[in-house]
Image 1 (tube, rainbow, N blue to C red):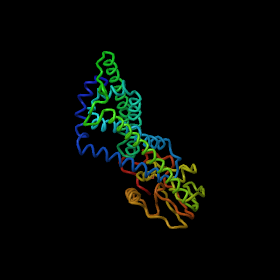
Image 2: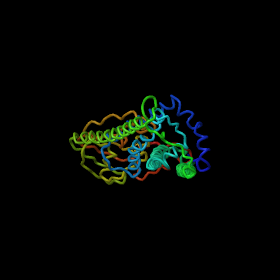
Image 3: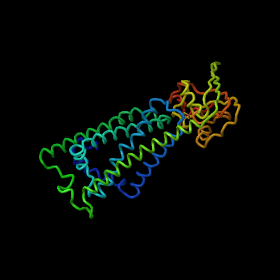
Image 4: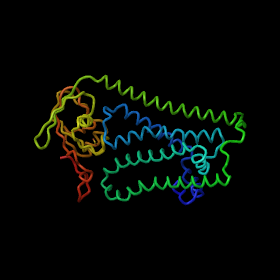
Length: 347
Ligand code: FES
């Protein structure tokens, strides 16, 4: 779409190149599969969250994840259904005419979709890349790109809108629907097909809202079913200590966040960075074994036995004594040896 800054013909000429893979059977299925997996993982994450208290990054990523589907469904279904039932050819000029002349609210939705999806993707990529040793070297180039790409795309969209409006003034706008909506398309009228597409679109949107509500209710029931308290005793490096008593069920990191206790968590609880690691000094109850993800991170960091990731360990009812091993304000630059570039291992 960024090519629209130069001309709408350029955008249209580039379409076969960009769509070459995604319009194939394999490419189409990868797109749909990725979308379904993304929704499933999002719902799973929502269900398993023990607190909705989050960092501002997580709030933005969480809200954008929830918004993507309602913004994407009308676009994706409009193209699939429009091609199959209304004989549309989804060219850029047709899309621009739809967005700028026929259904401007759809144009606004499309702009929001681009912004929301881009922000969501950037936060996810940033969370992953910032842990890499080479990230500080490429970061100065990626930040401008992260801003320039969507800005250019939106400028191209706006410029394309100018072209569409110029066509309108010149009286050369293509008809979006046949002059007679009763015209037959494979035995069904245009109006009937259009009404069917609209019904299915709203069905998908309502279905998505019901799914989110059902997951929220299931999460509420899950949290209500947890009974029992856990006492956590923090022993800090400087000799100070602190104890809190809270409901069991959440991870040590979630408990720290809920109780405003600063705790390092550079990957924001994804079990990858290891900065949330703690030494479990003793516990009155059994402690679950590390998951494969947690074990992989502990092994990578050469952690001695007794060390666990606070974002993964959910203490059971009883008491647990822990010692956080990283400063709460640890930064990504502290994760690697400045001379060798090697990851700093656990002591
Ligand atoms: S917050 Fe990164 S591993 Fe726990």
